[in-house]
Image (cartoon, rainbow, N blue to C red):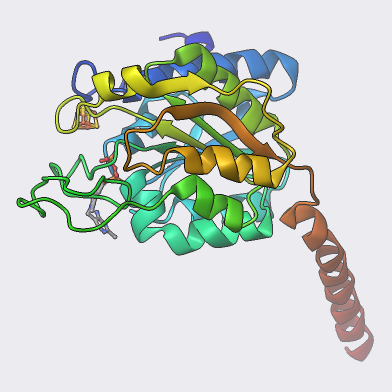
Length: 283
Ligand SMILES: Cc1ncc(C[n+]2csc(CCOP(=O)(O)OP(=O)(O)O)c2C)c(N)n1
Ligand code: SF4
């Protein structure tokens, strides 16, 4: 496959009809557009977790790093702090990011570290053949909850808003044009950006019809207003039969972790220089 399509020779093992294909096609198109505008491909790094979603790292021809389950965020943070000029994009599952990796996610949002999180939120642990996840609805009958989950799901966007994320959006795997707009805006956003993708797992948790009946795009929404964002985010709590808003809920410009970290970086260099001078003088 040619570099311009950003495809690779790795055989794709996703099930036919899986919502992950939209995410893959969307991100390849957006990265191709951005490379001609602001962001050369060699400056992009993909970090993936472990799960069906994570195979995306094999399917996009840019630098990538397979993390372990729940650890996309610390790996991305490390890359970003070491090489602030790179664009770091994480692809994580709902199990990966909202379950095992949740604490990392909260702290990355709190720090406003300049990374993009794309969450393949199929609302189940799919690679391990269908256990309930933090966003599975009440009553969810998976392999670990055969009689139906007795817990209510978390609302990840509400949690991220409370954690001070500076860009929050939601799309679906059925709506590619919106998904591409969200990817583009999230990647160009300076700071912590999260796009929650309602990605349909056609094999274990086929919600195509459920979403098709409920989703709508935000209109005349003031994304700078955190209260307006909260109202819209709470409209559907990942459990009810309410309408499901899609689009950018919240966006705020604020100094990033790397910008605030910079002064101590310089101090460290000065300190190293002084240590070297001291050692030279004493020899
Ligand atoms: C540290 C660690 N914990 C647990 C697992 C087992 N494991 C692998 S994938 C997975 C769940 C994947 O679910 P999700 O992150 O939602 O991704 P999906 O497969 O749905 O895309 C689990 C629990 C693991 N490999 N490593
Ligand atoms: S099991 Fe589900 S998420 Fe995994 S590849 Fe198949 S359809 Fe996609």
